[in-house]
Length: 98
Picture 1 (spheres, helix red, strand yellow):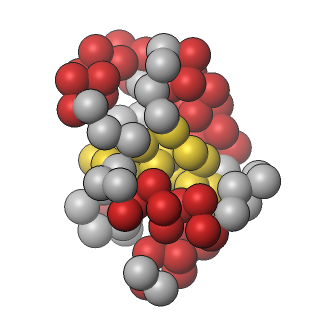
Picture 2 (picture 1 turned 90 degrees about the horizontal axis):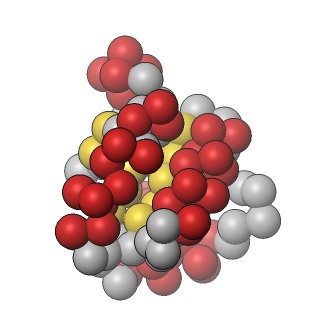
Picture 3 (picture 1 turned 120 degrees about the vertical axis):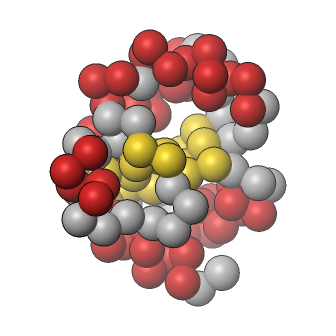
């Protein structure tokens, strides 16, 4: 999962993290993490202020971890505590363990 440990993800979720799915809306509609918010990667920067207002850490995910990695870099650059949750399937398995 791109250097992110399962424990790191679990810790952030325990701290009340919001889960952001950075895939396209059609991908999100075909299945997503329960409670996740869909903000496609191309819209992350235009939503920075809204995400900051939530004042919560973020777990970002996509299909494979590539787009969520890019989103993680963008969010970190704006001072948001964020972790790359990787791909949808792997994050779903981690959350199931919580």
